[in-house]
Image (cartoon, rainbow, N blue to C red):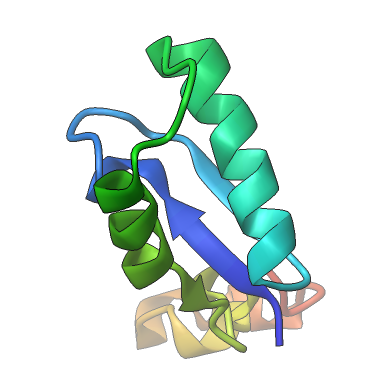
Length: 87
């Protein structure tokens, strides 16, 4: 299953999110981001351990994939005739 790392979990205020097919890919992308965005020339062992702990599995269902008719109140039922998905 794919993995995800939210930089903001480690660096408050940073909105960078990286996804990858596995932990090594996420770590590599995260290290590149740490260098370019945060000026880190090396990753200390304690930070590397925090990064590993902050990597999670990507959720199967994403909220933007919820069919429109499940989100709308009854008075918007006419919208149920659309494609049924939020783009």
